[in-house]
Image (cartoon, rainbow, N blue to C red):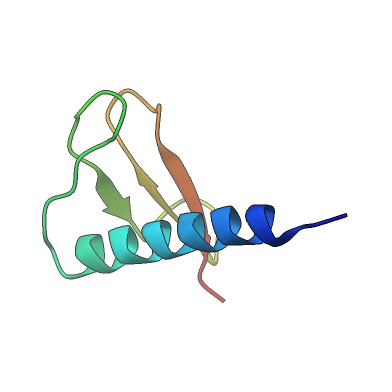
Length: 67
């Protein structure tokens, strides 16, 4: 089996999310790809060691491990 295409797609997705989180951490505005709502970064969630980046309609939701 050739996993190179899957590896490239996974790597591109990871880098896209990493760059998105960098923008949010710097206080810059980023928009959801689906609804064009403004994404927010919340590092003070109810769960210890977790953060979340999401849009108002919850079509984008990235859970972060902060430990």
